[in-house]
Structure formats: C-alpha cells, structure tokens
Amino acid sequence: MMGLLPTCVRMAGGDLPAGLDGHDLMPLLRSEVSNVSPYEALFIEGTVRQQGWKLILHPDGNVELFNLDEDIAEKMNLS
Image (cartoon, rainbow, N blue to C red; front, side, top):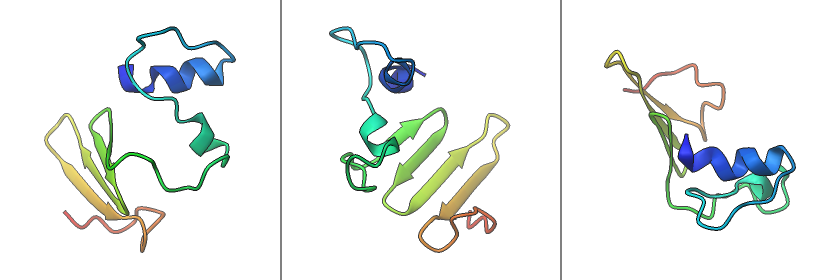
C-alpha cells in the first residue's frame, strides 16, 4: 500500500510529507496529463501494469493476464 499512499493523501486533500514512499498519481486520475503513465510499469498490491498489459497475482496462486488495449473489461484471461 505504501506506493499508493501519496495518491491517497492527495485525494484526501492533504499535503505530501517529504520522503513519503511512492508517487502521486492524481494528475493521471484527473486527466491533467495524458493517460499514458510516466512510469515504465506500475506495481500495486499483486498487480503489475505495463503498457497495455495487466498481470494479477492472487494470494491463492491464481494468475490473470489481460491485454487492456483489446479487452478493457478484462473478460478474456490470457494467462
């Protein structure tokens, strides 16, 4: 959760303390910048997003892989 903490602080209207682990993604969520992430990959709680791909690693060992460019609703698991 630490990686999301700056975004959560901004969503709550707070100021970011120096040295906080993670990145503020509010500009992406508010469409203040292009919808292309400035990061090569995002890792959030067992999920990896890279370019048009989303990989989900579930605690029970199940894996899901989606091509979001072709399947934004995540209906076709390609794993």
